[in-house]
Length: 333
Image (tube, rainbow, N blue to C red; front, side, top):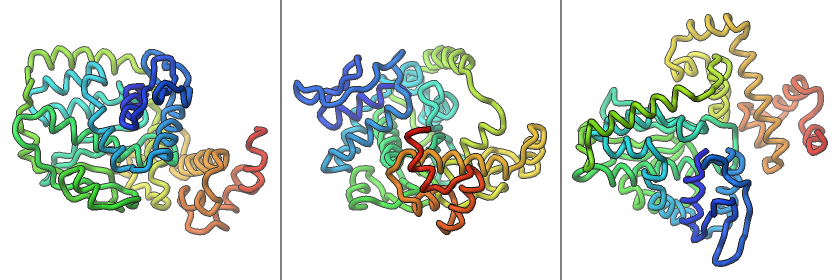
């Protein structure tokens, strides 16, 4: 996770995150993080910091707006420069879609330009954390702001959508984004007319952008990642569990394959869809129980169960002890 996101959020809250990991308000160090390594923070350190800042701030929408202004494309290195110098907004977003893993492995962007409107979709690729809803709002707020900064002419958004429920005044969100904002949607997206994708970028220079893109190809080729289907399936299943147990056909579609292909490839790894689903539910449940901020009823819901009793029986089958017992013993594990 690039430390630029953490520095931008600290700045939005009127603080400074120093290179040594100290968070400073005025002249006082109010919190310390592990010193970023090669400009990067661990996922958990970033999320914990984000949650701490959010909980201490009296106005989440104002914090969101401040973050959107603070996070700049220049802060995300070669990818930011490649986006700015791409000839059109479409070309910029195509670079985001392909190379975002160079910046962080906690989320991906996907450009769906197959219809009208087109969508820039933001998909989390991480386990549950209480701050993820706010993080997702910040991701789209920063994207919308930077898209408007790089294009020539006026960029008009059709709407912005979030999967979670609204925690504040929806009119203030709409005023910030400059378009309707929908909550309780089926995905986190920015919707815009296809013509907007063809707006030229102010600093568009195809030769420069192609040179930077070649550098990004080298970077992404050097990333070490678990390319197994099991790992990809876990990344897809975990954030989807809060909407209930996902169906294989829907997950296969999200992963760009047919249900039959998904089953065939799982069989090649000596797995079933149920195996990986259970692993996702069990891992998330144990993480939430250790975290200690959610009730067992809430954890049941977040792991895809409609009834706490059903979750409790399943968890005991997976782990050999009841959720409450696991939670009591978790600090000693």
